[in-house]
Length: 524
Image (cartoon, rainbow, N blue to C red; front, side, top):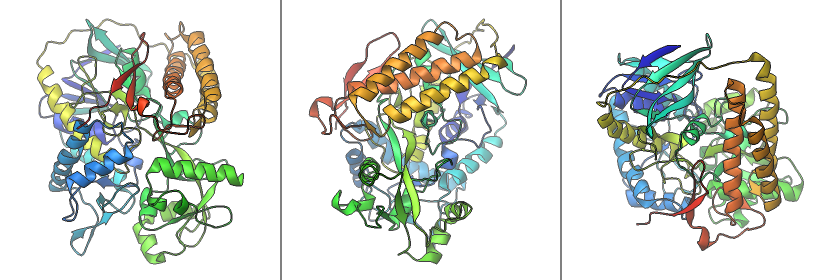
C-alpha cells in the first residue's frame, strides 16, 4: 500500500472539485482524486449555461424569487441568497481570470431558460458552457504546483477516527494498488448518480460514489427523493440519451405530440419555458396518452443559420445520427439528469461529520429545493466550492495521524456478478422510482433493494461486492424517501398523491442506523 499525506484531499474533478482545489491551494498541498480523467464529469457535459443577475434589467431579488418558485417551497432561503449574491461575484471573478463567455457587439449574450423571468444565462461556445468552464479550470489547476491530480483512482472508504474524517482509502486502476490518503480535510465533489437509471444524460462515472462514501461514514443525507429528469433528451431506441439543452426551448423551440400539435400551452402559462419538473411530467403524460416512446421537439420555425451557430455542437452531434435539428422533428423523452438532494451541508459545505465537506451536485446545500432552477448548478459549484475551501482551511493545521488499514481486494471473477446486479438495480429504479411513482412500485423497490443489501452486507470486503452494496444502499435511500413523501412536489411526482401537501413542506433526512426524520425548511 502507498501512504500519502496532503493538507486537502478533494474527490472529484468537475467544476466544484476543480474550484475547491484552486482556492484550497492558497492554504496548503492539495490532492485531486478522480476515477476517470480530469475532464470527465457532469460539469464537462453541461450544455445550458451559468445563471447570474448581471444584466442592468435584472436583479438579485428576481433571481432569488425564480429559484424559490422552482424549488417548490423546499429551498433554504439563506442558501439561495448566498448563491445569487456571491454567484454574481464568482462569475465576475472568473471573467477577470480570463474565462470567455459568448458576446455579441461587445455585450455578453444573455440566454433565457425554463423558470427564469429574465435573460440571465451566460454561455460559452454556444451550448458548451460546461466543457469550456471545466477546461478553463483544469488549466488553472495544472498551473499550480502544489496541486497533484491522481487520475484513474477511486475513493473506496473514508477513514473515520474519534468521529472525525481523517482521510481515505482508494484504489488505483492502473496497477490495482491501494492508496491511503492522510488528511484532516476531505472535500467530496463527486457529482451525481443518474447513471443508476437506464436512461440518463450523465457520463458513465455518475453512480453516486460520493453519496455512498458519506453515508457509510455516518453523514446525513437530505432530499434523496428529488431526482430531476431533463425533459428533452434525444430518444433513439438502443442508443444513449443525448441532452438537448434547455436553451433550445429558451430560443423558441416547441414541443409537439405525435400529431404535430403543441401541448404545453394548455398546461402552463410559460408553455415550453415552464420549470423542468412541469415540462418533464407533461411530456411523460403526453407519451402515455399517445402510447408512444417519445414526443417531438421542433425548431423548424426558427432561423436556421442562427440555430446552427448558436447550437453548433448539438447540431453536429445530432446530424451524425441522421437528424437535422433545423428542419427535422427531433424525437425526445425525459431522462434522469440531476441529483437535487444529496449530502446535507451547512452554508460552508460542512457535513455532519467533522473533517468532511461536500460541494456541487453531490451536496444538498438547500439551494435547489425540490427542483433545480436551470443553470443554477454551475453557479452552485463556484459559490459553495470556494466557501468549502476557505472554511476547511482552518482545519489544516491539526496534526494528522496514519490510519492502519488493509489492502483493497479486487476479484476479477466478481465483475460479471456486479454487472448483473447493477443492471437489475437499474431496472428497478427505471421501472419503480422513475419520473412518475406510486406506492406499489416504490414498495417493491424498497423490498428488493433491501434484499440485495442484506445478501451482500457481509461480503463488502471485496471491491465489486462493495460496489453492489453502495448502489443498492443509495437506490434504497431514494426509494424509501420517495415512499415516505406522500405528495407530488418538484422532481418527485406520485400518481397516487398528485397534489402538493403543506404537511410535507419539510426536508426528509436520513442517517445510517437511524430512522428518517423531517426537518424544517429555513425561510426568510
